[in-house]
Length: 159
Image (cartoon, rainbow, N blue to C red):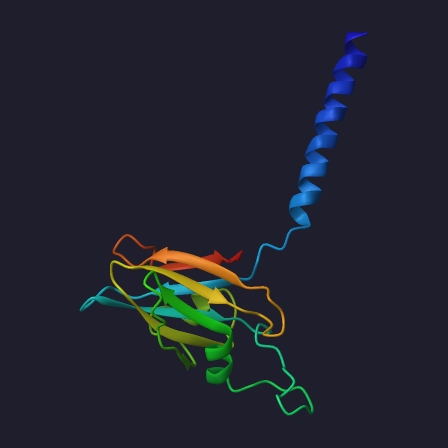
């Protein structure tokens, strides 16, 4: 009888773990990107965002027509924003490679990089909007300070 009860307990625990894992697997964890932070100098630190292949999708132009990819700088300004705790937005530009990290360390060939800057000592939110026609947005929050890990792969969370 003890064996049957023990087997039943193991079965119930296993079923609970299975249901929990299926629930977790069904959630969208958000996009994962590689970030590189420069050394703080003169009160600012450079922030580089690695845009992997296929993140930039073709979009239908406002006047209709055939979907096509926008120039990277235009796409970056529409889909990404870096906001400080006070609500200020940082300007963004694009570049082919990062001076802060070698492309081979990123784990793939980046499509391009977005370059922006953050004031040291402030809290920032990096916001990504995958589809401008949808309300879904993702964020990553960080404090721009000396203790920040300089190079890291981060997964954004839903807003």
